[in-house]
Image (cartoon, rainbow, N blue to C red):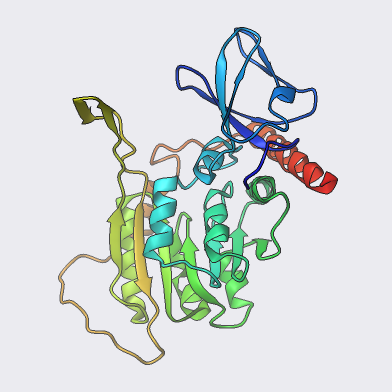
Length: 322
């Protein structure tokens, strides 16, 4: 939202060394650093893109966060889908205004925000999350960004297959899967997707990738799955000193995309010879602990939930005052 800064707004402060801090404006509030303070009152009423000075003489560029900035700084109960992958999901699944999107595995709500923006006021997003504590954090993060919960968003706590099988068929134009075992949900996704609809799965490891692709192929109800990954590398540009950055955002996950065929349709299949068997014990290789992901402790999740709730309440209070 454009316009001057208001109480309850999230503001991104950037100092002379490029370090960024995100604060929520409050009347009489103070931003503290190890060198000094900055009064929130200097920002309230000032235009977006202002430069203000702290008590130590440090100057800060103040901007309202872009959605990319917001998702990277918001409280996290679970790992987020990074902007590079979120953008690719929107493009690969062709998610657009007015569509009905089902999302499984809401996590901290990062991808949900991108989906809600993409479908606009005329579309709908139904997010399904198995863990209540993650759903609570996501709900507050979404409310904190949109200044309240959008009417076009539904959040359900439960199992994707059970939720979809309990409803009417062909209720979705797009299905987005961000979960540990997406292959288990393929029958439910097949039932929920309208002909021509797209399913896209965000997958962490190669074994998961293989099993999901084969599950989609085995149904005979989808086009040949397309598997990709996205990497982003920045460049240092200073006069004639131009070189790639030493660090880059490389592998975060794979994307598998396929489209729903009409009932009874049979698409041409590519001949292949590959092993397709999976043992139950292989699942242990795909758990978060086995691939190096650390589970958030209950204490940490409670802390994140409080932070997300405070942000959402501040934005809602500001909206009520207006």
